[in-house]
Image (cartoon, rainbow, N blue to C red):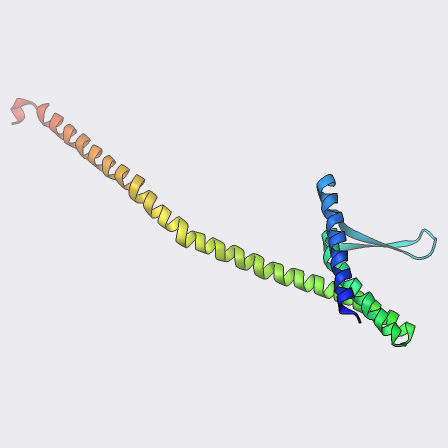
Length: 175
């Protein structure tokens, strides 16, 4: 197998699919997603519709297409060696479907969950500890503490004035 040629065509395939879907996104506003698969046999109208548990975006095309180029290149090198065509066809189907589904789902879920949750929780914790706690302390010291002291002083003055006015209003007979 010629690895330089294979890597070149894998890169070209990824770029073409990426360019196509990004231009599509610019004009349509979104990249379409597949939510159900329609399987039909022959020219009859009987078809089976499989509804997927989640939508699969076509942006995965730019990641999966190079794998098909790799599989095609590998199969081509195997046919040049003189293997049986049926074996190659079965291996190609199993390789294409199995590897595409397993790697796509496992990598997508594991990497997405690990990095998404890890980054989200880590970033949130760090922001809470290192940013909001000191900012809360500064806010409390600069805004709430002076207001509380001012309120206590004003309430003390009010009570002092009330006490002074009550002492002046008492009748002389009570003295």
